[in-house]
Length: 316
Image (cartoon, rainbow, N blue to C red; front, top):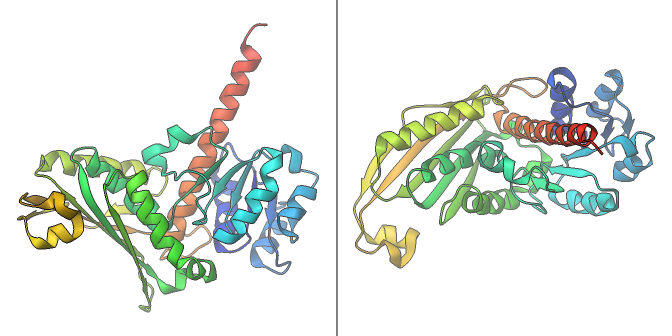
């Protein structure tokens, strides 16, 4: 596989894969700045590099053998990269908010998209919170889901800041499309605290009256599943339930359907500590994106290997 983008996210992807993956190998690290730390580290690790962007990738000797391309650039750059790579049949995993392909959150809907040519990893806030929305929605219909992602301002690089509008829009759409909420809202907070704080997320869901024990169990099971690839992902405190009598304020959020109906607010508080493979531990927002992308790439690779084995073993 190849990585496009030699910044923090791309470099963390490379280190995760080279050190820990049993099914993936980085065959190319692609950037546009020949002096970037990511390309320098790749060269030291024996990974072929190019500073000529996607055109340089296509020209590399290893290009034909590459099956998966992870794009860790920006929304605008990914659109151009996807267009350039389209004739070559590569599988693209998009870590930008471009969302050319379907949104994918590994614990929620990865199995549905293992054969898709271009999948989108939503956002860091989406990867952290959509599993929780889906866990609540598995027990009770979620009429409104609102997430607040608070990250250290130090972990929000130029790409994140340039894509801040896409972050909120993409996350909100994915809360509905993947999480299962009727309406979704996303808010991001860049926290300037020093020393930097790790990622904190609040998930607020408005549901009908429900089996509270079942909701709590569903959330806890989902947290355990995310921890399989993001060990620093955890509940900050117990799941909270707050009765919401029917009122005008609910009508503002839910529309006319809220009239005269009492609801329940489910609130889940999370924190995400990074694994510190390359990024600092407080940058859990970036770590959950790279960890989720590696999980997707590995599952795609496993599926490809299994299908190849079936073809070899099938008698003619």
